[in-house]
Image 1: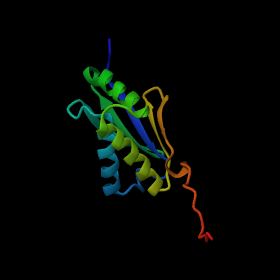
Image 2: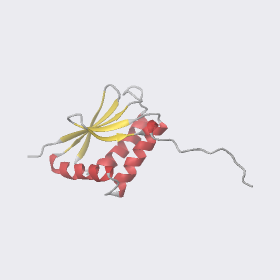
Image 3: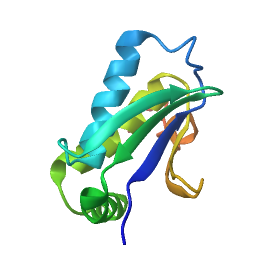
Image 4: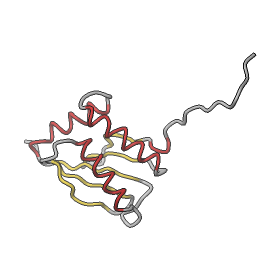
Length: 129
């Protein structure tokens, strides 16, 4: 029998005390878009330590949410989830942070590279004869 599941989105650059409210709302919006199932996924709290957004998915929606996350990680599936995945990583990079999406057992589902993603190569000026 499937039961409710929890997903944690960890942001290493902030604590609950230092995460600006507006930025929290932006992260929550993208986290919700990534998980999908707006009627069955609920915000629980921001946990202590690094800023950790905790969401609870109702049992009936667990298979759909897990499939959505697996597809997004492979670069497939719902365009909204794919966009949210990229937006979260971009937000983390802009905040000089990295992040993780973990399940309730602590197993990593998605590692967000954020500040650690490869930087594009920059070429200085050159002249061609």
